[in-house]
Image (cartoon, rainbow, N blue to C red; front, side, top):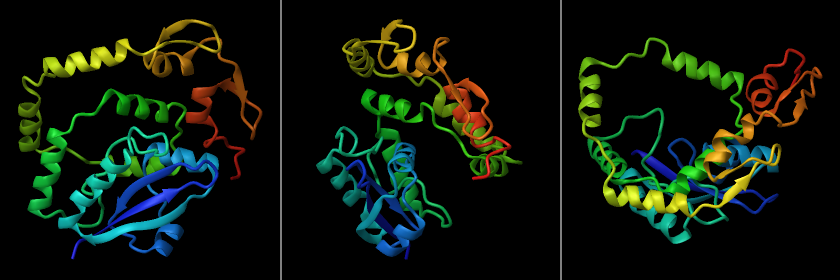
Length: 242
């Protein structure tokens, strides 16, 4: 049986929560000891606020998880609510390692991915979560190993090409996005005072501002701009013994 478990992570330090699924750990003890979730904003949050408390919400067959996960996502508004750190609705079908999806599961995943459109709020939430996000050397190594020798087959290339041809957002979708962005406030950079429209100024200016104060590496004393230092130097500093 392909067992799936839906879990809730709770961070006592901040009161924030995260809803997710796993195909590997199915008890509260296993979750607490081995797996706290993989959402980028959630990982960044518990690294800052401390270890989360994990609990099992539901565990059962793959065929049943989709409706239960979506019902919970809608009922608790896990994307729009400030109490939750999810950047998208949990379907119970995304991801999964170490086992092969059934044809029926593949069909459900494909249908859910095709019909789902990310909202502007989700895009902003994702962008903010990734600002200043650093990738560990171990993660980089794993990504590198996974990508070595990886080539799309001719059939896969053809499918990607066909799927991309003529792909356009609907007029309604374009209008909704434009209306949302036009309603966003102007934000002043705290470093240089330049004013720009959110969320673009968060993504493209804040970390790159020329007047942003330099930060110092706690291991070697080297100084540099915050974004670059956090992403590329801190974890790789030769004096870092952590």
